[in-house]
Structure formats: structure tokens, C-alpha cells
Length: 79
Picture 1 (spheres, rainbow, N blue to C red):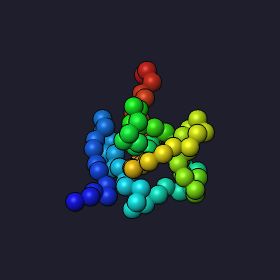
Picture 2: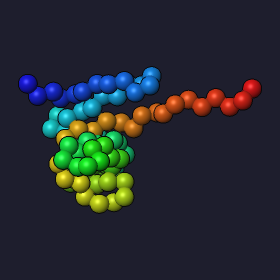
Picture 3: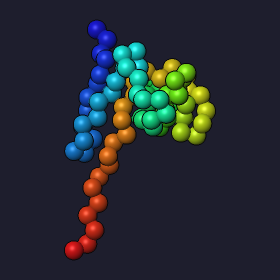
């Protein structure tokens, strides 16, 4: 059974991985992407309407999942 989404929690944030064959992000929106055959399996990149591109600007092969960038931790400055 193929999963179209995978969920996990990072700190207090829910991260939902979406299968590329079920949905793609808005064009040129930066997201986290999953490349299973790469030494670095999670990248920041975007889909330009024709294919996946890394944040550094090079084409990426075989992206299987994507997710929105997490908000990150809240920073509280001194009282």
C-alpha cells in the first residue's frame, strides 16, 4: 500500500510529507523535498512547473515527497 502522506512531529510542529504523485506545491514555493537515493535525503527546493530545483539552483532527480518549510522554534527575548 503506497502512502500519499507521511506525518511526524518535530518539536511541537506536525510535519506532513506529501507524495509528489498526489500533489505538488505552488510553483516556485520553497519547500523541503525528499530524495531517497541521495546521501543528503532532505533538501530545500522548489518545483518550477517543469521539475524540481534545489535552493542552489540545480535540477534534482527523483524527488518522492515534499512538505512546507517548518515554522521553526519560537524565540523569546529576555524580559
